[in-house]
Amino acid sequence: MNGNASPSTKAQWLALKETLHIENRPFINGCYQSVEALESIKVVNPADGSCITEVFACGQAALERAVLAARESFDSGVWSSLPPVERKKRLLALSRLIYRHRDELALLESLDMGKPVRDSLNLDMNRAVECFAWHAEAIDKFYDQMAPLSENYLGLIRHEPIGVVAAIVPWNFPLVMASWKVAPALATGNSVILKPSERSMLTALRLAGLAKEAGIPDGVFQVLPGFGYTLGKAMALHNDIDCLVFTGSTATGKLLLQYAGQSNMKKVYLECGGKSPHLIFDDGVDIDKAALTAARAIFFNQGEVCVAGSRLLLQKSIKEAVLERVLQHAASMKAGDPLEMTSFMGALVDEAHLKRVLQYIESGICEGAKLLCGGQQVYQDSGGYFVNPTVFDDVTPQMTIFQEEIFGPVLSVCSFDDEDEALRLANNSCFGLAAGVWTADMRRANRLSRKLRAGTVWINSWSGGDMTMPFGGFKQSGNGRDRSLQAMAKYTETKAVWYDFTD
Ligand code: NAD
Image 1: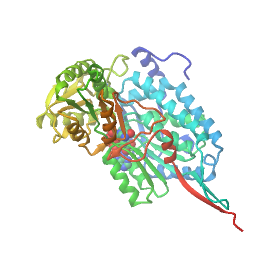
Image 2: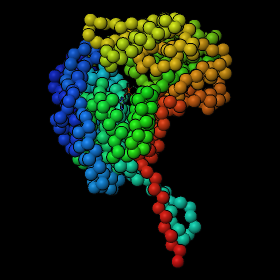
Image 3: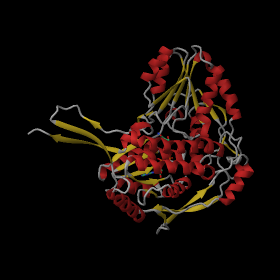
């Protein structure tokens, strides 16, 4: 419990680390349990390569127990039939508990996946707190409807919980991504089984204990750590899971659609990858602000962001001026120790991901893009996985670094002559998660906001968002939406109930 000010120095975070109890067991049917795991998963601190703990990897047997508990809890009505106002109270209690434990959770997340603890505390934890509170508050404002029928009939359009929901989430914002699924799914009365990424399990496991403390009944919220290709696949193929919600890569999303088709045709909602274009026009925009925003849009969270502004499209006449400023900002946004409050970027999540990012950089060089800064691993002596901001100029749409999601601090820059060319370049992608436009011409802003094929379009800004705004993608960035009342609707079945009062 935390009634005091949060740590503000590395020494204070290290002192807190000494007091952490790190849970390494799955949470099934209301308690942490040791399972008959064939494998365990090493949790490695990406800042120094040290092993923090080993977590039980759940397999089919643990999944069967969890699905049974989820089904029984759902059918019993212990949660699904609770008055909405009661569900609201308990989810608000969970939101408060996350807030109270924010220091511990922020530190776990930073140690687990390498992000700066400052961002983890100030951004991720606040967003998770807010997400649970928002969906809790929405529960008793989420009305059913009545159809406009003639007077002898009554037609009710009811939203009912779907049943057992499996949530599979990634590692880049572990608690926030989990919250975006778990909060609306619980709010609408479902029983939820969460599988965190095998690269970031610690806060999800901790969340399970906090949910119990908040009064979420046994079996209603369970957390199973495990590998994607075993546990995740088994969840997607399971015939007694009614709905699968996912955030992760497009490649995995495509597999999940197949698994659903091979099993019970469960509902599948996907939030997948992105390669978001950031367009800057020469029609009078504040290029200082645009350049700073462009640098933050790609280097925040080490570039491990689904909506990273990874393709910077600059109108030719201002290209050099903007690029010069972006490079200055890149030089000040270096990677550093995640526990130092001054580090802009932390470490990449693990060695495999580091290698993947370096391979993309290599492909950029080999395919003829011009490397302007960064481009290699740094601070190797630390044992961690650090790469500094990397910028490529003269990138063309044929290049791998223009088309594929790198998920690291690598910016691809290209130029355009006019609005038509900018739009063609921007939409030249299999992804459609987000886009940004800097223009002083509001007619142009309106035109492009309509023509850009993306789930979110930012005008003269990047990364703004709120629980009231839906979030998700066009094209291969996914389907369905997280956040807002649209997320609540996603976790319900629509039932039409027909009353006939004719004689
Ligand atoms: P990933 O697809 O490798 O893994 C995501 C989750 O899926 C993990 O829990 C993993 O264990 C599981 N998984 C992997 N293979 C599986 C399989 N065969 N069957 C079932 N589950 C499986 O993605 P990642 O590397 O963890 O995350 C990065 C990706 O997530 C990026 O593409 C990023 O753009 C995307 N992402 C999207 C959003 C969004 O809202 N659209 C947000 C954050 C991250």
